[in-house]
Length: 261
Image 1 (cartoon, rainbow, N blue to C red):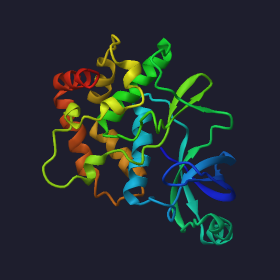
Image 2: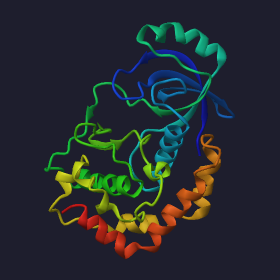
Image 3: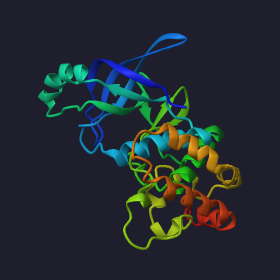
Image 4: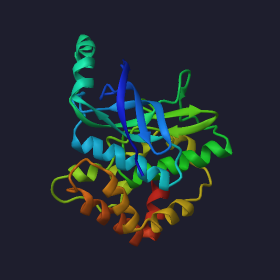
């Protein structure tokens, strides 16, 4: 489900974003030969990169593919002691450093891309993807996709979602929390990147809800088995979260509608 590439060349560090990711050329050797790709990597040692963020990022990408949300290719990236020792003197000039271990990589989509806009006038294809992303972000409690911080790019005319390291915020909650499907209580949907574009439109939430209903525990377990971050300590809460959402499908549709008022 996720290949593990080895970091072989440092290209640059990216100035945008709280986690200050690095752009790395990475290599994979398997039965099909050698593959070299460039990834935007969130790695141990960078600002605000921790086990929770790496777990959320990885699971967020894996689930997004199941929900047919366009995202870049995802991979795990291995940073060896030798690679880190070579790169850190350069990164140190920007006040950054890496630690050996595994990071999360999303394939670099190239140059000249623009951030997606929350403009009201999206075409039919853009509106469909915007609705998927809106519903998905509410379902996984990812409140980090706003007009000020879109975390979406336009690639070949299509919206591509990136950055899920702030998702599954319920995993960090202390004490009593709202039901997983009670999105409108959070009062965050109005800040979502695509709120203005979707508000007042005759959108259909049923296809997304059907995707939630077909997400099996077996499929979730396959994802958990792929993720090397967190040591399994969040798996039960994730299962309970999606089970509760699926069992309240009728309420879920009402909550989605309320979130666009």
